Length: 161
Ligand code: ZN
Image (cartoon, rainbow, N blue to C red; front, side, top):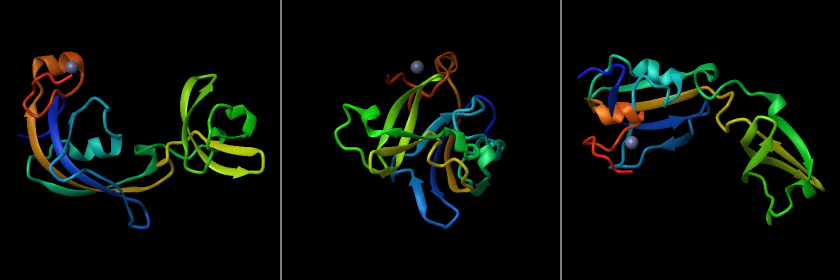
């Protein structure tokens, strides 16, 4: 079966950054499954998977605009440490939920200097060109229940949540 809108696609992947280091990968025996054509994975990868079939392996390079977005310097802010009251250990790399005018947003602590803490609201992969190695394990049509819910219900389509 060929991947098209409303296919349930099961795949293994590894993701490398520009310098070739592996940033993420699926675990052996635990491939990812998603409902194709609904924007559940980044656009650059979803586009390349269209029309592929089970058993295929491919390398996909995704530019930031079709990945996690361009890096936006406006999403970086410096706040005094006291603005983060209640957080016991503030250190670089810590991820937090910040309240913003647009609602809660995930931010990462990227710098701590004296009393000032830098919070970055960009996705950690924003602005990066990504290289995916993908192996398609299985392609099947979504069940009626999966389409109604808009997500995958396990490898055989049974409800597991
Ligand atoms: Zn469901």
